[in-house]
Image (tube, rainbow, N blue to C red; front, top):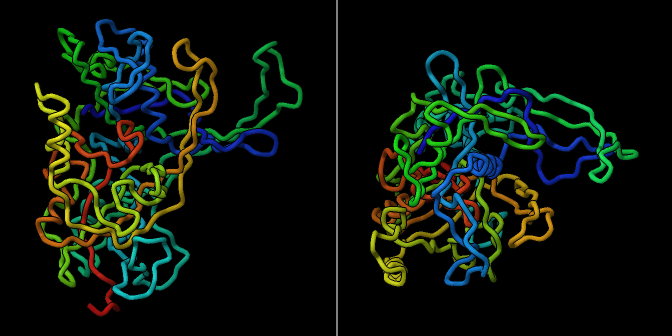
Length: 449
């Protein structure tokens, strides 16, 4: 994927679904969600007016809309944005901190091997507790990839080594919040709306900070003499372009980060050698980006991944269920491909505990068009599991643990990759939701094994 840096030319406005007006200033200074940046690139591709690109109709499984093909850029895949510090020649990418760790990089919130019930609903069976005394000191909000990799590779119970101060940051290290005032304008008269005086929060990034984004759009019908099939590279024209990101038509300059060419700046999870306790191999999965798990039938969704059984916590993914194993091969018939994936073996693993932060509202506004939406309006609001949330699994064998890691790591079973292979969010995975990495864990030291 292409590693891209967005540099704002002014303050930015990223609001969530909460109302803005009267005494409420809204929440426009929030760090942008992955969907916001994905929409920004999608709109930029439309404005570029590329010709000879693949078009498709809306629908799936043989049920498509009757009107002509008019949907473009379905191959766009993005991830981010993440804050990037560009001091000097090095570019340091930062990611939300894991909820089970302190600033030393050690896991201090750990499952108890106990018969006591969990505070969460089934299928979780182990409660989690802290190994350190209560404190008002909270961990730094953002960790560098180096700090993340140290955390992921640390063996449970290993002495604290300490993390470099420059590897840990808070929001104020990257941006400031500005308060502006405005007036409402009537769409019908283009004049001031009576009583519509409001205040709003805006996000101003510091001079050395950029929005780091991963993006790619390999279009099978597009072919550029210099840039090949990737529409994102063609959009940047090898140098850079302007991207409108967020509300109020705020502009960012998008350029390729050539220092990361050939590799992605994301942390890398463990793929083998997981801890063993009580005859089970222990794997934990930590989210780098939010994930959306909607309710499906009797499955409640919400904090519980859709690929986990809501009754007993069994992992419903297939063995080898990373992108390389389940992708459709060239020339393979669709029915044969579905049957092959269906016949893949399961993973002998169960969810046993979790640490989940407060849900994040994900919504948006849909514009009217002449095909499938005659009227515009608010999109459905989803509640996403926040980045940093932790899910704990017990696996029946070392092989099952490796299979689970291959299915959950964003890079699959490889220790390094230039492509994102797994996006474990049920919705909006192509927009960068559901990226995660695996590590190992062990029970609380006061537990009896």
